[in-house]
Image (cartoon, rainbow, N blue to C red; front, side, top):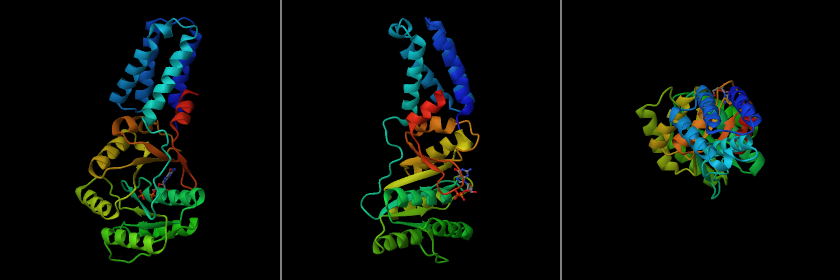
Length: 298
Ligand code: GDP
């Protein structure tokens, strides 16, 4: 998912580490290349600027340029700044708050972003890895096919879904899910909200009302990682209106340039908790900033 960025940076750092003694000018030249590489990977301009500024400040200190292995030190500084950019102060992005049963998880996002698929993937993960009893409910009353899709996925992964009652609105379904989760002794219930093709007032009002009924422990935004900066803008919008606790970036198995992943934390302040890596039910990974930084720098 970061192949081209990794290739570009690999070239820059190869030259740096072979250079021996480094002048401030060498560092500046390298940072110009880092800047281009980040922008080409669709990282936002302000995030790129801040990143390059932070690295340059640390890398041009006398203790670095005059050290025995200046190139390697610069690479380490870039590595550490990448982790900082990806994770901020959240060292465990894959963790979900699912204590105090039944814990509600609200899934939000635009239509086609992968919300229903991700709801089922997460339910399966909570069941298989954490031994949780999970109930899933679709609130997409406009699209009966989406409700059926969740039911089909539920059967496939062995997770219960709330029976569909035609004609109920999203808030009524959320209330019924809560009741059923309490009565049925579930640990977690997941609400797969309706999506729209773009953000509109009706959607936001509906999600807000559902949020107020459910008081979720986690509100996860599911967004298509291939859409780059748009994914980040969508996250900003959902966060300011609904308040999200984290992001799931889908389609990271595709040939996206990775900019969404790199800008998300810095722009929204919210962590990426998981990445979707395919259509299959186990194609979901925790987002590990350390591993991602390692992969980018090769
Ligand atoms: P929703 O409208 O947001 O609920 O989106 P869906 O869950 O129905 O997903 C839309 C399409 O994207 C489906 O064909 C999914 O199989 C596919 N999809 C979801 N997540 C991923 C992912 O991480 N990688 C890939 N390649 N496809 C995905």
